[in-house]
Length: 178
Image (cartoon, rainbow, N blue to C red):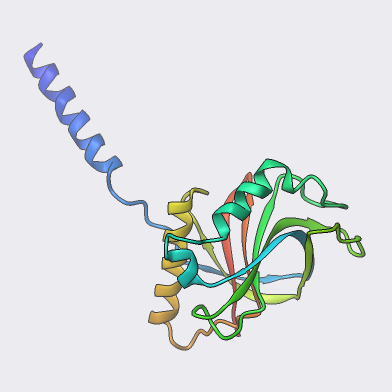
């Protein structure tokens, strides 16, 4: 009985230590994505503003979207999928950009008041997988994006339209590349 207890304690200790290890994200995959349109709620912001902890706009945008903000989007193609589209970069990740939080829609939809639409052009993307859809997991995935491009100087971001895709199959970041 004493030996069984010692074995169980060892297993609990090992499992506890393994569960506390960070989960490594797989390396990014290259993908060609066809053009599509998104309608949703929008803000213009910067990474510095969002990281300041004082007047970020992305958290409130998500709150508005998740509490009825998506119900007015017409012609939704993928009801269970949410897109966070980053576009209209002034320069790169350090400057202002637009974020539209919305749904993919059929072409030619009328944009409801207080919403915006964006046509995402067909492009080549690097696709990064987030370990979850939590804010911390998304931040970790974006950190992986920044680290990847810092280490792979020959691959360059296009800064046209990047997007996060939240679906039943997981959360992925699509980063447009040149």
